[in-house]
Length: 114
Image 1: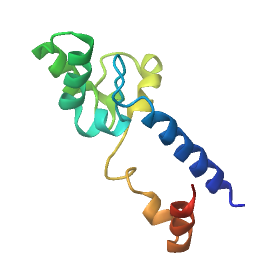
Image 2: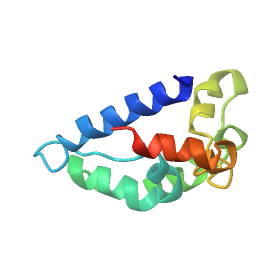
Image 3: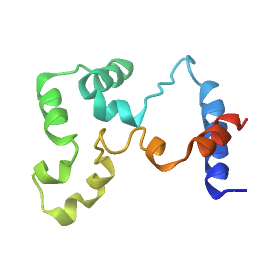
């Protein structure tokens, strides 16, 4: 078995588990990609869900610090901001990049996994 197939199987199992929670009261499911690609819309959804007002200063903070490289703009020393590197996402580099790495045959194997 190819190592990546086990990871894909686990991810598909997670998606199946996640579907059980979609639409349940007091549950909000968001995608990490949405936090980066649709920042304001996604955070507004979170704030609405929590019953908080989505004020302009919050929008300003989100638009300034949630970016392709938030460490560059975060107003603290780099040693204090290293966890924010986890939020560094470049939509042009990450999303869909598997299509450039996997062969057509490997993509078919992934799609056939249950």
